[in-house]
Image (cartoon, rainbow, N blue to C red):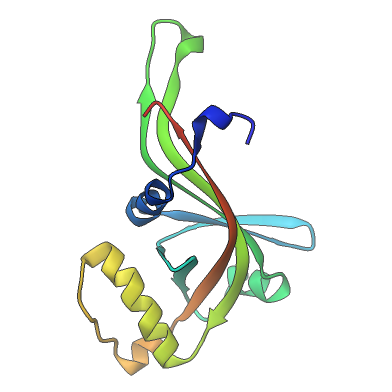
Length: 153
């Protein structure tokens, strides 16, 4: 990271950003063509979980190249100033890398969906109808590295 003074070293702060950020931007690449898609997500035990329809561009790309990049940000705020060149942003952000795989069995999908639901809806063991589980796949990203950055906080 170029600005080491802005790097987040505190693991609990990194965890907090991942817990509180509402959107993960997933970066994929196939045949030297990049693709970025915003998704809801949850993070637990060095793993990111996302859900998707069982077919489509992102799944085709993951099957062709499971190496991914992801980005999240939290508490972004525009900081205005008198001079245009002094404007800026206040934020926490994380960029990371990992290996994606697809969870396609019903028990695995339900377990991962519970992690996602816990993030957005709170504690609880949720049940999912079998027909709903058949209509989705869960993307599991085993995180191989990540860096956090903060500015203005």
